[in-house]
Every structure is written in C-alpha cells, then in structure tokens.
Amino acid sequence: MFDYCVVGAGYAGAVCARRLAEEGGKKVLLIDRRKHIAGNMYDEYDENGILVHRYGPHISVMNEKRAYEFLSRFTEWLPYLHRVNAEIDGREVPLPINFYSIDLLFPCEKARTIKSRLLQCFPGRESVPILEMKQEKDPVIRDFADYIYEKVFLHYTVKMWDLKPGEIDPSVTARIPVRLNYDNRHFTHEYQVMPKDGFTVLFRNMLDHPNITVRLETDAKDLFRADTEAQAIRYAGEPFRCGIIYTGALDELFGYCFGELPYRSLKFEFGTHPETRVQDPTVLNWPDDRPATRRTEMKRLTQQVKQGVSTTITEYPGGYIRGDRVWGEPLYPINKPENIRQYERYKSLLAQFPEITPAGRLADYKYYNMEATVLRALDVSDELLKTCAGEEKE
Image 1 (cartoon, one colour):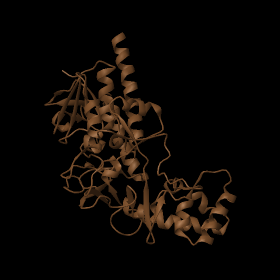
Image 2 (cartoon, helix red, strand yellow):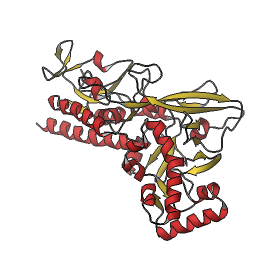
Image 3 (cartoon, one colour):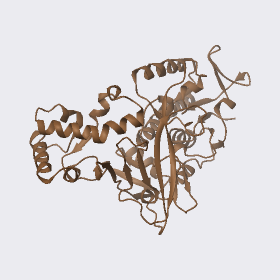
Image 4 (spheres, helix red, strand yellow):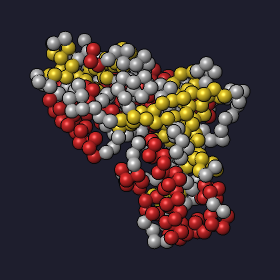
C-alpha cells in the first residue's frame, strides 16, 4: 500500500517523491508512461559514445541556493558557461546582444555611435530591455532597437510560437535584454553547472530510496480516474485511497471535457559529423525564416572530449498533436489569455479532488525553466510535509 502516487518522473515529480519518502517517511509510487525516468531531462549515450539529451538541450542555471543545494545531493557538478550565437545577415554574433555583437553587426563608426548613445541614455545600467529602447526619443537608439527586434526576436518568436507579430505579448518583448558591456555569457546566474555523469544519473540517484517504487510504461489512467460526477478518485470502480501528485496535463486528467489545451512541440533532428568540432558556439540560433530555430553541439554542452566525431541536435518547432509520432509531446504551454481561461476551467475542477496536488509545467500550464520547476516542487512538497506532520500529531 502506498501513501502517495506521483505521476511523472521529471523534476517536479522526482523532487516531490524524494522529499515525501525521505523527510515524510511516506511510501511513494512514482509512475511514468515513458520507458525511462528523468522526463524531458533524459539523456543517454548515442552510437558515437556521446551523451545526448533526447528531448533537446538542457542546462543547469540557478540563482537560488536552495535549488542548487538540493540537486547537489545527487550529482557532482562540472562548471559550465553557456555560449550562444545567432546568425544575423550572414554574421554570427553573441546572444544576448552586447557591445561585441554591435561591433560585429555594424560598421566601425556606426557601432561606436550606437554604444556611445546607449551609455548616455542609460547611465549605470548593465542591460536594458528592448521594449524600453524602442520607446526612446533618440532616433539612433530607436533605429537600433527596431533592428534588433526584427533580426533577433521577431522571426524567431513567430516560428517558435506560431504567432503573428501583433499576437506577441509585449511582456515577452520587454524581457529581451541588450547588454551595455562586452559580457558574452548567455546566462548570468550564480550557479552555472552541468551534472558530471548526466541528468539521468542525477535522477536515478534522487529516486534511489527504499520508500520509492518506480513503475515505467505505466499510464495514470491505468491506475485511477477522476470521476467528476461522484467527485472522487476511483480505480476499477473502487475509491483510490492515495494522495496524488500530478505533473501531467490537466485537460488529459479530466478527459478533455473543456477541449484540448494548446501547446507547442519540437521535432529533434540528430546529426553525426565526422569532425571534432562542428560550430564555434555550443548553440547556434537562426532567428530568420528557415524552419529550424537552433542547433546544439552536444559534446560541447556535456564537455566530453572525443576526436573525429560530433553529434548535433537541430530543433524544429511545431504545434502539439495528441498521439502524433513526431509532434506528440506537449512541451510549451502557449501563454495567451484564452488559453489561460481554458486552463482555469480545468483547474477549478481540482477543488472537487483535494487529494490531487498539481505541480510542474504541464499541470500548472506555465513555462517553467529548470530552476523554477525545482523550486515549485520544493514548495509543493513543503506544504505536503506540513500536512503529514499535522496528521501524525493527530
């Protein structure tokens, strides 16, 4: 008999399972419909002996000590500074755009003028969002902002999210930084690391606890059903007496009764190259009208040394199609008002099922990064552990 059933073996589910098992002393059943643990973080060695991320590249960047210290229990880390270039008008320039990028994109005198005006308009700032620049009165700054908006952001976002320019949320634009210095790092987080032995090993260590039972190739609907008429969780017609941490999509949990929630998905094209190094940066972005968004050289990400061969992953975005062989993974919730309203209808059904706790990108319908997912799981498990402690006192 189990105290909790955790649906999904990604970060949200694995973190909750470990804490409930270890700190709460609970018997936890963790299930996943895939053949492996680690969710979208899953990695394995390919035929070239290169560790590859099967669901696209993932990087451990964190600012919160709590997240870093928790994960550090299950892996050794390798320091890693991520580098990303974008191909713009036939030139490769670092992202985010910075003074070095400006020097590469514009003739010497024009680049000098742009940098000078930026420093004059935004004294003491390390970076400025592109939307703020677009609102400046200085025509040099405005023209520069318009150029960067189109060349770096617009086409990339349109093909990534399948949105028309007018549908793009201004709050997204507001977050695009231009650095007022020569800092070429893609991230500025305090902790920038990669797990020494890969993400799958990290997850294997996290789930290695006597109170945790892992069952793969097991679908939640094979264990229980959310009966909205009876307002009860049932298995084979009988009450399902187990707390549930659900990290899947709520529309699926409730049988798509309000329609399918829209997501974006990705197609991954793995390439083998008979050369030691394929490209200069780890990731090369294509913010233009070609169908692919970016290409990652895997051994640069995992810091493997292997001569004469390299593996790349090229990503093609597309709409999620339930059950499709290529587009059947719901990876990115689409943050549009009508979609949020639809999600809230599903979330309202959870009030009928206090035994179900949602957590994670799909269950919360939010575009969490890795750190945000871990922190969300830590917060959720905090509340559940408090409940457990209260029940024991009673």
